[in-house]
Length: 116
Length: 112
Image (cartoon, rainbow over all chains, first blue to last red; front, side):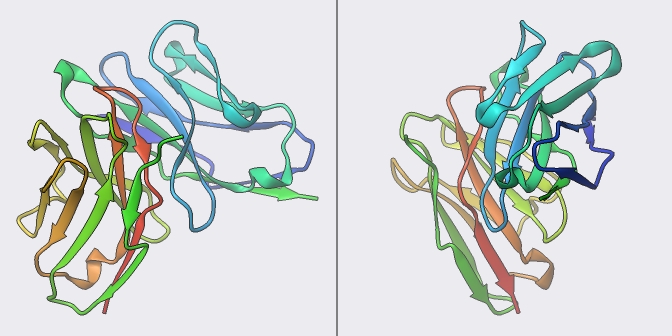
């Protein structure tokens, strides 16, 4: 069974500082990987995704993530955070085998706090 | 930009009552999903739906749950007899084929 681990429950970063949120996955084949962001009381917004090809993917709002197969990781990064980045960040893995509509498996999330 | 919409945004119900949560997926999407998020916990997959039938379901999706696409635009989740532990945020999502899932804003269900 696939699983996603986000080892950091909370992360506090100063505004303007760089950010890295960790995500490790367990999956038998090549996974499809996603990062979603959830602001308080809001739904899930897709930040970026990895299906294949270039292992460094760019997303919205200046975020990027790097797929490292050897480490089973898909860490999210941003060079300079803004106060508006404060939110809950979820890593998710999908397995689109056989054309079926497979559900995503989410990590528990990392709560990002931005200090002024 | 097209979005997934969900109604109602909030619903309060009494234990044992039936609830129907509604979703309008993005119009050209063919795959539809329901997820739930209990307060403070991670998002959990419930069920996926394609070609008018359930494609995959999790162990959470027991006989109390059902899904339906009653017309060309709506996708519903019905909970037949709600329990206290069904209190959660329920998210609908849709995708074009087996690609990125786009989520709606959610329905917050409170069972009293």
